[in-house]
Image (cartoon, rainbow over all chains, first blue to last red; front, side):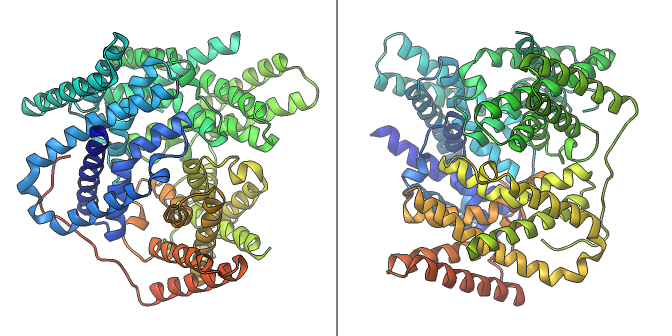
Length: 206
Length: 206
Length: 206
C-alpha cells in the first residue's frame, strides 16, 4: 500500500536528519544511530504509549530499525555531500510529516478516540520525533520555536478527519490530505511563514 | 464535585504559568500552547503511563485541552499585566499542587497500588508537569533545585493516605489534606523554606 | 537468586552515581533523591512502558525505592570520600550495566518479543537510566557521546540471546553473559576504547 511505502521513506529521511543533528553534537557512532532512530520512530511511540496501543510499531516490526539505523549510518558516511541534497531532504521531511499525521490519525481513530484526540494524535506522531531529538541534543525543541511545522500536521489531520466525516472514502481522504498538507508545508517553507512569537519582559518566578 | 472544580482551576493556572515560561524562551504561539498544556496535563499523564491506567484523563475528556490552550492564549495576550496578579498565581498554583496530589493518590489507590506508591503517585502528579515544562524549556527542573514544592505534594499525599487509613472518610480526608497542604505551601513561600543543597567539589566521571 | 542480589547492588550503585551528578548541578536534597532513583529505575521503567509490561518493577516492589533513596542520601553525606572508592564505583556500575541488560532481555523474551527487540530491550534497560539522568541534569546524554557503554549492553544481550538459542540453559547463559559483558566493559575502560565520533561542518536546517 502506498501509505506504507511513504512511511518507510519517511522514517528513513527522518532518521538521516536526526543523525545529522547528533553529529553536530559530536555524538559517537552509537549516539548518531540512537538519535536517528528516536527521531524517526519516537513520534509514533509517544502516540502509542499515550493511547496504550500495544505493541508499538517497531516492536511488532523490528525491520523498521534496520531502515533507521541504516539511514543514520549512511548519513554519517555521506554527511559532507548532504548539503547538495538539502532540497530533497526538505521534500522528504515534508512528505514524512504529512504521512505521520495521517497514520497517527488512523491509529487514534481505530482506538475509538474522540475526533479532537484523533487530530491531536496525528500531530503528536508528526512532531514528537523531532521533539525527542532536540531534547537528546539538549536544545529547546525547534518545533516549539518557529516554522509552520506542527501547524501543517494539525491542518493535515483536521482535513483528513473532516473529509471522512463528510463521507469521503478512506483512500481518497488520505490522498487529498497528503497532497494538501504537503503543499501547505511547501508554501510555508517557500515564503518562510511563521506564527507570532510572544515574549515577556517580566520574568515570573516558577 | 468540589475537587473537579479545583482541578479545572488548577490546570488553567498551570497552563498559564507554563505558557509564560515558554514565552520567556521565545517560543511561537504553538509552542506556548504546547508548553502550557504539557505543564497542566503532563503530571497526570506520566502517572497514568507509569500505572498503565488507560485512557489518560485528557484522552477521555478532550475538553480539558480547551481549558489549557485557552489559558495559554490568554496568558500570551495578557502577559504584560500578569505581574500584577503574581500573588493570585502563587495561590492558584499552590491550590493546583495539592489538588493534583490528592487526585493522584486517588487514581493510584483505585489501581490497587501499595500505600507508598499511592503517595509517590500523588507527588508525581503534582510535580511532573513542571518537570516536563522545564525539560522542554531546556533547563534543570526547578523542582529538583529548590523550594518546598515536591515536599508539599509528598506531605499532602501522606496526610491524605494516613487519614483514610485511620478511618476518616474520603471527603473529610480530602478537605483536610487540601487545606493542610495549601497552608504548608503558603508557609514555605512566606518564609522561603528550602531543603539543604548538596554540592561536590570532586566531579566524578560518569 | 544471584541475579536478584546483583540487581539490588546495581540499583544502589546507580542511585549513588545519579545522586552525585545531581549534586554537581546544585540540586537540593529532594532533587538528589529523584535523580538517583530515576538513574537506577528509569531504564527498566522505560523498557516496561515501551513493552506495555505492567505493573512496573518498583510499583510492584516499592521496597526498591528505599534502596535508591537510601543510596542517594548516603552518597550526599559521603560525597567527599567518594573519589577514594572511584574504582569500586566503576566495578559496580559495570556489574549493574550487564545485570540490567540480562534482566531486560528476560523481560522482553517473556513478553514474546522478536530476538532483535529482546537484545534492544536489554540495551534500553542498561542505558536509559543514565540517559534520563542526563536529561534531568540538562546535558547531552553521556552514553550518546563516548565510551563503549551501550555497546557493552548490546554485546551482553546478543551473547545471552545467542547462547540460549543454541541450547545453553538459562542459568549458564546468564553466568556467561554477565562475566563476558563485565570483562568487555573492564577492557573498554582500561584501554579507553571508544567508537568513532562523526562531526559535520555543514549545519543543516531541520
